[in-house]
Amino acid sequence: MFGMAALPAAQERLVSHLHRSAERMSELIETTMDFARGRLAGGIALDVRPCATLQAHLAGVVDEVRQGHPGRRVLAVLDIDHAVECDESRLGQMLSNLLINALVHGSTETTIQVMAVTTDTTLRISVANRGVIPVDEVGRIFEPFERPADRRLAPGLGLGLYIASQIAVAHGGELRVFSSEAADTLFEFSLPLKAGAH
Image 1 (spheres, rainbow, N blue to C red):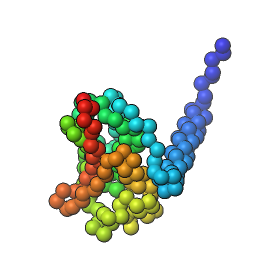
Image 2 (tube, rainbow, N blue to C red):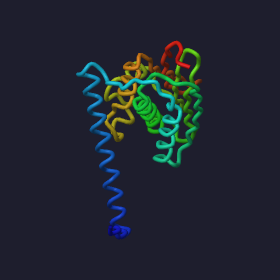
Image 3 (spheres, rainbow, N blue to C red):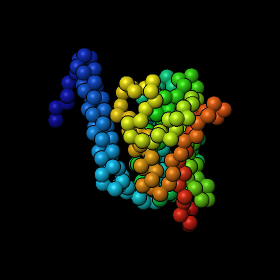
Image 4 (cartoon, rainbow, N blue to C red):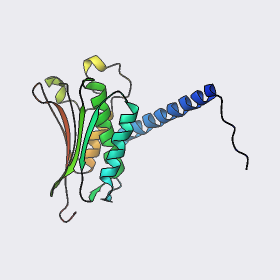
């Protein structure tokens, strides 16, 4: 079998650019489909099963987001010590959406804090960053296409937080936001765990 010759540097850059563009288009299409499913098809579909690898999966999501934003600091504390009945891929998508939201809208000077822990009764996943959501926007934060007034022209569809909230609802959990000058901004997902899940 013949090996492929190495591409010249300019062609490698072009192929890499085309690959990234195709990935972005795929993500936009999938986001649009999730929006349509959430609005028209009775919510986002899940593949729920006992997941013993949720912590590793979420750690991979954090690493992937870090690689895409090398100049930013993300501190992750993950302590999921038993299997959780969930759709692991969807919870990873939710965390990714929350992290990207923090990177885009939060302070660029401070560390974003990610936590994912289990207790006997609850799974909690949170993302905290410095920055305050205006009071009049907090109540609409999970609505589709909702963006702060100064970020209306930012890239993206404005669906990330909406889809994150729909993933939470589909799991039977809750995604809430807390924001104040004193405590900054915290997005927290909580999911009651079934008895005997340890």
